[in-house]
Length: 97
Image (cartoon, rainbow, N blue to C red; front, side, top):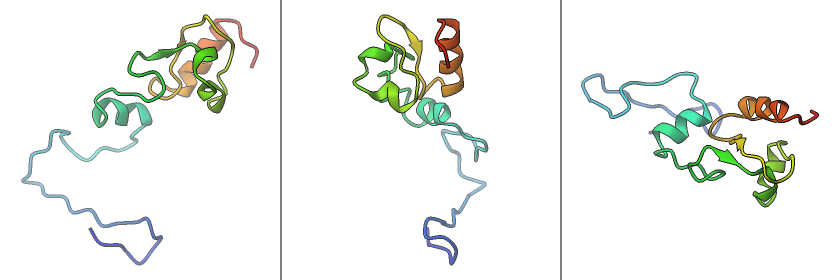
């Protein structure tokens, strides 16, 4: 890859139509859960792959996503499941947003 003349974090990416990839093709609208599932083999650094967290037991990680609501709740992981799903889960458990 070579840097372009634009922003310093812009690169040319060469695609070979004859080469087979384990991912199939170039993807669009990629989300963090997509990357965790397809690139990181499901290994999420927030929930360790369980897809849920106890917001009070994360050592402050839940606060970074603004999904803190105390202990003893199994909340959808805001990173790999998605922040919107985690927020809906909080509403389900009666949290005031």
